[in-house]
Length: 405
Image (cartoon, rainbow, N blue to C red; front, side, top):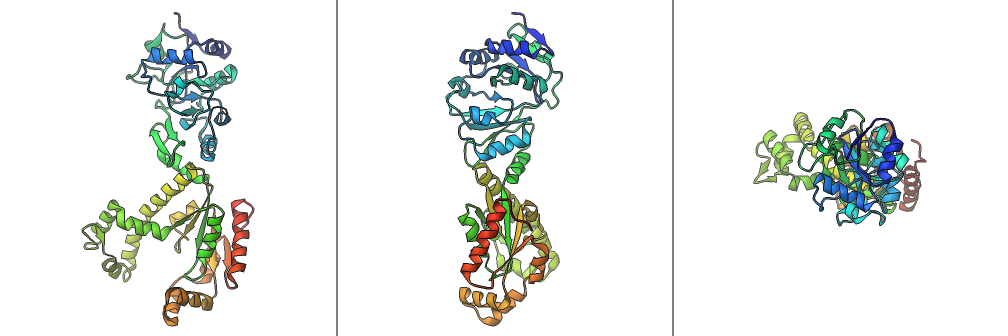
């Protein structure tokens, strides 16, 4: 067989693909060995030529995000969002497969990886042939992936119909594969795109509402409103307390900075409190240690929620303003109430005396602080019904993108 070298004639390459032939194609990562992904016999040849184990599925190259509907089944909102953000580019998105895809492509499974390569020649080939391309890297199994047409020819000259010469690949590393067919999502192969890039893009798909304010102001009712609208509610304090029980790296850092604060793997809260609450510098050191772990845990929760199709999240924290968590927020809402109302609520809820309730409230930030730093303010000085109604109106507008701070 004479292996053609094609540089410009994508119609010729498309004719070869439609006839069931194999064409090596350039991408921004490495060269791929492509065939009509809907032609079972053509796909069989990929396995034969590469010596690829039949148990390993193939991904499909596609020209754009519309392929999620053509070749995926019930692709989640997160898949569309990642395609919008990274395609064309080095990301393969795994979703449930449409029944039209041959079983050989799926290696007996029910999911398919879709990839839109950042190569104008390969995108033009995809548009002209009108078929998805099954296209693993253009190398025999077990040897390095090729970054040039010459390397492909060294592997397969005389064994495939054509090589589309697009010059050297710019990245030289395979695409990252992210599986959105499962919850929580997972990286199946770490490639040219970092996991952090994927995670950040998933987080950016969400509407994240921060809810803050002093004790007794009524944040619980506000959060109930958001939860009833389908939002995932994250209590930052609960996240911190869970980490205090389970996060060994965080406890190790605390133990190193505050000797005696961790005994037998258990945080000694009273002993730690005696140090940090009387020393602003020590408290700042503690926050520097714990904040990064809390934020990382919350980021995991945000990304998992987005990958599973979630659209909205509420983060409950007294200390949101000026922290790294504030960068994750779409909107920051301050919940305020007059002191007498807050005192009465605290006394009824916790069974404490009036003076102690006032002491706790006056130790916190004043209303002016929240009014100055929050994009939205909800006042809770009247009945619970009126406050809940105000919450529903504001949060509905925020989630629909209609609210203005």
